[in-house]
Image 1 (tube, helix red, strand yellow):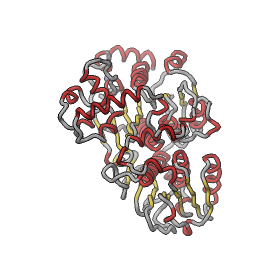
Image 2 (tube, helix red, strand yellow):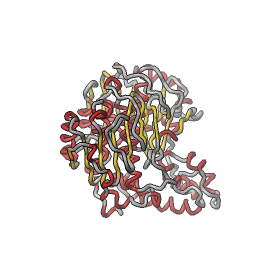
Image 3 (cartoon, protein in one colour):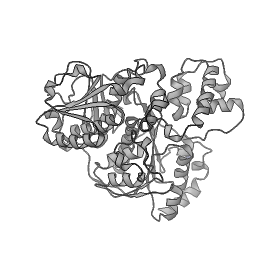
Image 4 (tube, helix red, strand yellow):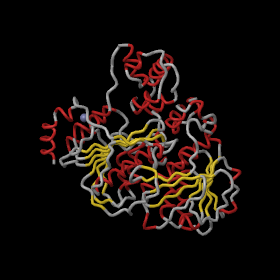
Length: 495
Ligand SMILES: [Zn+2]
């Protein structure tokens, strides 16, 4: 398939190839048509406008034909959309929503509230947000919409979940893999389903913060931080420059940014309430020049060694780690003062060994013990015990005999070793959801309302209501435990 895939879409195609036969229309989704619509009453709220503009950005990275329908009354939103449409190359139609013939589109996303003038016949994904709540439904949304309740985390999260729902429609994802969302109301504050919108965002002063990585997740963190009422300094460190392959996964990127420093573009974007500074450098080099304490670290990294290095070279008060698999979104919080496992406890380096069972375990995500049980079948427990990056792949193989899964895993690990990293699976809405959870965790930390759990993860196609909270404990043999006194001395020296 990859011969025909434009480089800009390579990472998204790598993600959808993991869906296999669960997405029968995956090969032709680029030929399908999507309409994005709203009503004048909905678009008068800042939440709805942010969802609309974010949805244009998300959809235009992946879809070939998007039509935006806006009512005549939505003048401000119309001009914002027109400017964005030009940038993203989106077809823009200016007409009254009530005249939109939804049946001529393969999927319709409607940013809406309940007193809509939208005629909602046919299959439409409705989306809205209010304070910390994101609502996605097959029926019109019934959340209140007031400007003072703008929350970019829930609004962007709502856009990401709704766009994931649109992709299920375009790819015709089978219900056995993930069914369309019927009526989801999800709080990005508690990271659970429910109807409690929580409190409005308050202006908050943050101590100095460090964002490591400005790829798919880091760019989405910068995108949300731009709208957050947080004040302070943000350093962004990334040694790479944006390439074509980043276009589909980086929410604010356009073709003029290709070749520019990732950290500089991200810092430019995030600077609004915060003062953000980009550093085009490897973390180890930047840390040697940095003289200031780094109490808050946001890690948007895509590999285990980089996570280990960030954890043990800084040991901040809080480290918030965002991760993605093909469709898995995850956040991990490590608070030095709490009994949270650190990133060294939670991310283990793959074993380099010639032992056949260990090689099989590394290639499949199965434990070494399970890899020896060749005639047993893969279970849900195997998937839950697997490293995060391999869960999506292993999940597709539940019920299959372990010996055949090992053969397949070794074959694909060999082929992926020869692939450039540009083909690492990524979808912007999956990375966006990790970023939402990271910024929500940051805000909760700043207002001293830490959650009970240290990790939350969910499948972005199934939706966050089925997500898992984990309260894990550190590994007794990890350096965060065995060398705690030394690390404490190191921290005292730093802070
Ligand atoms: Zn540890």
